[in-house]
Length: 406
Ligand code: SF4
Image 1 (cartoon, rainbow, N blue to C red):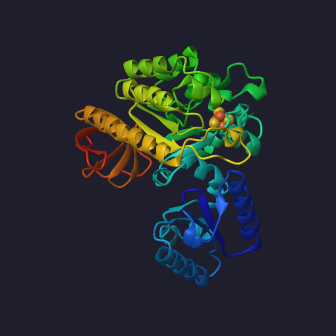
Image 2 (image 1 turned 120 degrees about the horizontal axis):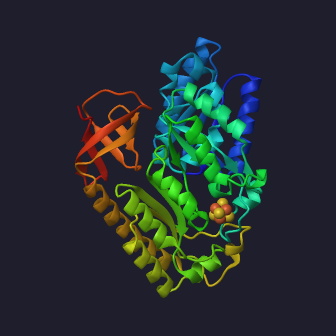
Image 3 (image 1 turned 90 degrees about the vertical axis):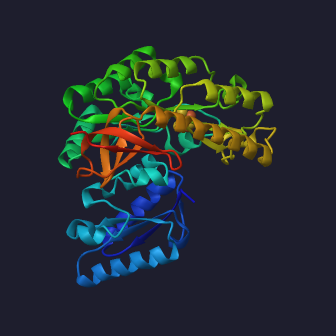
């Protein structure tokens, strides 16, 4: 259901025009517009001109909750700026100055858990589009060639984020390592990270995703030694069999293991995750075994598993032979079980450690290595960076428990 949205417009013509723009942007990003009852995200573009508008907002939120209890409600529009109390009936709300970035934020969030982590963290979009051609991916078609945001626009956006009080900022883009190429900037993404370190030394940055094929030794050296970059990494491996990687248009697995080992030995508590696609056309037992062995041996701390589903208009949609659904489902199940095991081992290894985190909401924080921690002592504000001592692990529910050391 994630990826389906609804938008209800309240209020003036300006709201209607902005709503239209948000709908178009989300549709461009592959989101499907649907009714509020069947959407994963319901956006209310609210109005605050009269008291009536406020009560209409309240009624609407209650109605949506009744009809679609699983849906996430996001409030934008004037009510949010005028009456934050009312707006907080929604799961999330964005003020007027932030609301047009909603499509990018939704894309960056990527899933429902991430959604609830937004408010505490700023998002810095530095790049759009992609010059590469992975055969399963429609993004280059939909979003065009890689375009980088200039350093002066990045600086302005950072000023806004600092003014809004963010201490943690997520650097987002479709393919971050392409940063700067279209600007003729030879320093590229590494130059951007150095720029952020120089001008915003107090901010902790998180890199949303890295492509291991473009992660040079120089870039990795810098990332591993930079104090302003948080050690929670997502690397887009997708598979490990060279045959399948080639069919995916993603080269070979050269250097995959070395990158992981270098991260692990430099920062043992680093969170290192990836996505794997199983059941890609042509994947046979040997290919799956190669992927499984890699997943087992690699120092990954978590991974997500997706069964291949053909996207019309992509090369992979035409590829044969297709892997039967039953087999792809079974492979996903095996790999997910392994992911659970690895995550638990990792969580247990963190017990007794002191790690920094960003408070997400009262009693919950996101640690530097991208693991959730719950805490009961010490009050802190969402968005604040705090150090935690990890005191226990909830194995059943996959999270840590900790306290703020005195
Ligand atoms: S999967 Fe990523 S790298 Fe590949 S074409 Fe799509 S956006 Fe580009």
